[in-house]
Length: 400
Image (tube, rainbow, N blue to C red; front, side, top):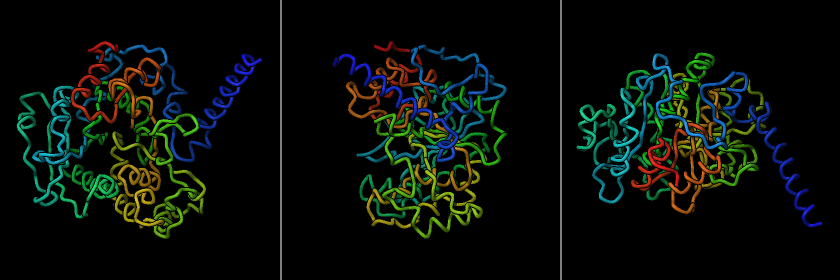
């Protein structure tokens, strides 16, 4: 009897899971926050890129023959990265950056990388000196680096406060990058502890350029939005990636938010109050020129980030202030299409995995928790593991 009950219980869970999955892919869910990448591929025969989980565990050659370099190349991409001061003796990103120059940065010929570095004396906007391992970038076949200082006007005392006021820092970063770099079709933001697989990124961009790039007047924003919480217990799927009228942050109840809706969406007629606004995790995301231009010109991150915390000045009630949340809210009110590609862009890998980041990636590859062409893994804070994760995802070491 207990055996039959177990079978019945497992079948019931499967049915409920399928129902939730259907709801996740429904038009109703899409209107309430984001578009799953599968919506872009379902009517295309043999799409050159998918964001489906790779349960078969097959590996794609590093030199992908489906990429047409006449349509996509790294000159089309601008990269933004926020880094800690090169000369900080306690907290610095130098070791991770060194590994990046030995791995993915050697594979992005023609790309420009904009670095916004924390400075304590120099004013924001001052050109910063590059360390030796980045100075000879042209000779070493590395990207072209641009480095600008950022001196925070806020009294940032700990990591939570730094995260809270990151909307301001990244607003500065995107504005400065837009001025310094030549115009690009795509702009991506990546954290120093995110491992990037450039050839897989080109596969995604190539697919978008061929099929969708010019189909949306407001542009596209692609990242790890996460599965709805009922389908996953991963940290990236917590409600911190959702805004609604039921949220603890109380954003929808503020006068300032209502004024922004009236400014950007004058014909909203209260619809936003009944919707869920979703945003991508901040370790990595990519957006089109139109998307970033609209966000910058509207000065939206500052407008969103400066909305007062409705439930007091604590971290949980100020969800609109972290950079990734502010960008998501700006995407919504600027009517930019948010696309979820969480199977290829892993925003927060599971904490506590045996073997650290490399252990998580090996487990994910074996259990089909990554797509066929993974683009990023975040965070990988150990330089040795950073190198191994890159090698594993580019098929240069065995998965064992």
